[in-house]
Length: 344
Length: 171
Image 1 (cartoon, rainbow over the protein chains, first blue to last red):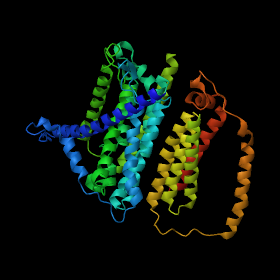
Image 2 (cartoon, one colour; image 1 turned 135 degrees about the vertical axis):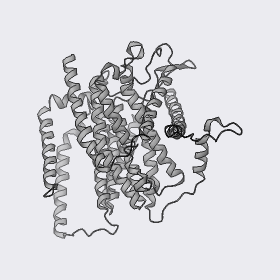
Image 3 (cartoon, rainbow over the protein chains, first blue to last red; image 1 turned 180 degrees about the horizontal axis):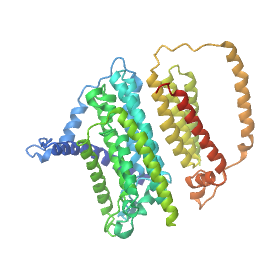
Image 4 (cartoon, chains in turn orange, red; image 1 turned 60 degrees about the vertical axis):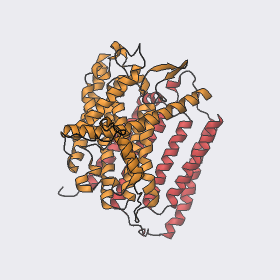
């Protein structure tokens, strides 16, 4: 029991550290990809002393800079909620990752370690629950700042979340119809056949449509362009985090990138076989590598979309969510369940 | 088992405290936030009796969707800090006390037989125990199919009704 508890604690801490580092470097990746798409160089100066290292130390410099910024709380703000809001948006984002499996099992110091922090038989619902709770941070930040731009950002965010969560949940239902379990570990294990290439998306071609719906909805849930209306800088200054500065601002940014990482990990787990890949049965250490590569590819896709597609107008966003994505995911459920009925 | 008892007491206290806070707060936003606190701690209570599905759905549906809608409306109306005076009808207030007492008595009467029953424990068959996705899905689509379908039609009627009522002429 004590051993198990210790293993959990260590795994949680390791995952936490990896996630925080990953978030820092995803921001660098974002800037580099943006620069590359816009035919610029991007941050390439910050290195170690003489060595520039392609700007690899940029996130560290950014972090240090943000820590030393003045922490401002507006006079008219609601002090309690203003301080609470960044934490409310960061904590659910950090909590999500514990159910995602990133490898099978490895042996370390004569001790078999399962490469996932915990497993739940409602793992997928747990993820959905946390993403839906995560919106409160944004909403309360918008409300407590006592600033009309912030309030507009918060309002838009809550409306957007409600609209796209339905499509997200229903697209996941289609996957569940095929896999028959909510446990993410089991979902990944089921995709291990055919040299680790029996990924859901290859196995059930109908899921390609589902994946497109899921991906669009998850872009909306993570407030990425073209759905970044809560922080549309051309009209709302910076939306819900207009008034925030210093580390509170960083916490919102971290939550946003964590949500991007989590959404990409969930997409990898549900559609692209999680950590499965060729030779992973013989070399279990390849599992986390495959997982990381797949997640990075999906993150890259989100960035690619961000710098290619312009932002939606608000009514377009609502119409698209309610009149296209939602019916499309319902139709997908009907088709999927009919297909399963006939395959049996 | 003592850990579960400790967790139960902690979350029960939080649930009741935030439920009281709903009534005591003057600002509608604080009331709504307290309600979220109650819902979250109820979900934790479901976890202590191993009803993970209900716990997750409690958060997805109530804390995640319905309460976001509540807060959306509160923020949209943006009630000013100095509260709008609620019409104080003293007579109704005194009438409410016996009715509340009656309702509480009724609740205790209904819950009376449950007091001593414990949930059947099915070791070795955790997948099909009470409160899991499997058992709830099976029950909904076999034993309780008719009530389930009737409820969904009822909700649909409410939705259509709300749309008809909210629709302005000439829209």
